[in-house]
Length: 213
Image (tube, rainbow, N blue to C red):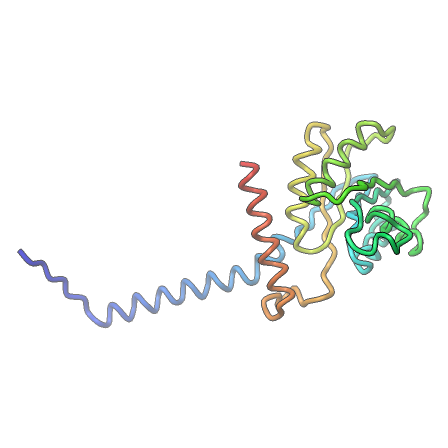
């Protein structure tokens, strides 16, 4: 027995058109919403600002402004060894380099704590969160809440990792993302740098998220 299904060509055209519209809308949503999703800004009331030391100077300038205007009492720079130019540099890790930069910008050195990892660690963000957790275990600094300062689309992943690792200490974690200067984040898909940054951070975030399920 043979079955024959007759499909009106007009119906085929309509199905294709609807599918194209759905794909176009999905692409538009992805392009316009994925960057603000990754570059999360959710600061909280806190006395401590933690700055990831690998940030570029432009982001460190923004961090200095945030520290001065945010009423913080302490700023913590955190980071591992510098992977290139180590033997030529006065500073051997990103935490020291960031602290020196912030002091040069005008942050009071008495308000800065340096939390440095001398090794070249893999999984830099997770390692920094663990490093901060270990430092807090021996520090006299009592923290109930902190804001983590990082760069652009790295924010969502950093926020997740730091919040998870510091959760046993019952430390509330807020997040602040500095704007990127090397691409227009409103049209990130129009530049190779923006496309590479967003897609790589999206994949890295999904990897961390799946690993924490």
